[in-house]
Image (cartoon, rainbow, N blue to C red; front, side):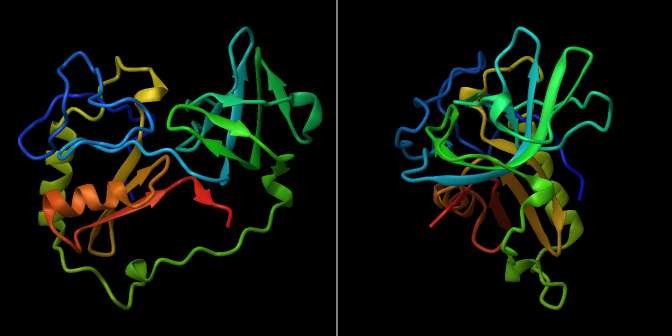
Length: 220
């Protein structure tokens, strides 16, 4: 699955995806607020959620929670929303090199659509045994209805809607982590979806074409 990483929402439309705002990247609604019709939603979580990812902190900067891809380098490179309440002295299996400290963890916390706040002690991913999350739509025995060419056209429209501008670095405006074709669907990975982002794309393109996957999952 081809993935684009560190994806930041801008606020200009290109035909299909209707976002309010203008080309300077100003979002149509504040993080966590209800989206007006046609606006891309950026929902907050109403309860605790589970994150599985890399926490990375550069010297002199605040720690970030990387939920998308991480560059395979030493030290690694990634970006993500701020993680609040993080304490390196209270966690195991952290590494440091060249002014960077990082580690991979399962973390329970809250999400306000702009930052993740730790609420329970993190667990190193090497010690964490997650419950398998199986999406029946990705079962190879039951592929989706779309041909590769049709999904490629949807991807091109998604990318043309200016969702990937490198100049935007404000994670309070971020939602999409990446996208790719899988089993007859366009799979779009997001930081958090309460169902409203899935509904947004269903309204734009029709049911049964897009699968929205949320990196943050409710703990209940």
